Amino acid sequence: MNIYFDLESCPARPDVLKALMPDFEGRGGTKDPAKIKEQIAAKQQAFIEDAPLHAEIGQVTMIGYIKSDGKFYCDSQSKTLSEANILREFWALWKATTMGTQLVVDAKFIGHYIRGFDVPFLIRRSWILGVPVPYNVLTDRGYLNDKFVDVHATWQLGDKQESISLEMLSKVFGVRQKGKAMSGAEVPAAWLAGKHKECIDHCRDDLEITKAVHEQMQFSP
Image (cartoon, rainbow, N blue to C red):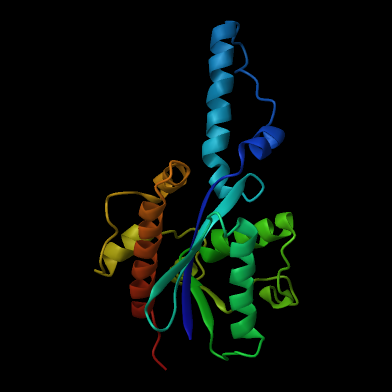
């Protein structure tokens, strides 16, 4: 059973960002107080914009899934579903399919760059929020479980210098390309602006492309 997943993130709450933001300084040699203030403000803004990429200053806004039936569904933050609950739902699905009563021997959790970003982000956010992480997520040697299949890592074929975006993969394999309404970099700001449906649509689009690409990147028996 293949479970395709993708997370979206945004900056942490303002109080968290304020508490963890470094004491930035102006560039060396700058004397003008106005310019120093401007430089500090630019660094603070860059810190906030970069926050969705770092578990200590970011947060999970949603996790989208496509299972074997091909249907998309999404757990996203709302009045009734917190980030911690989104994480609990993810690990519950992991446990049910890899070690629980619904054990599926060939179950795979698949995504693009999930070993480089998604899974580490989910683990770290879980630690921060006190959400238990199943022991079998890591091997005895401390590596991520092989059930996490990273399309990006598969494309690399062991060459860590090789890198390719999901959009480029969609073009290379001729699968339906991502819509131009929103790029991945725009999702955090869009979420904070209340454009939740657009963000969920973006997540669905990414997952459909990931599934199509993965289905072409197979090896014969």
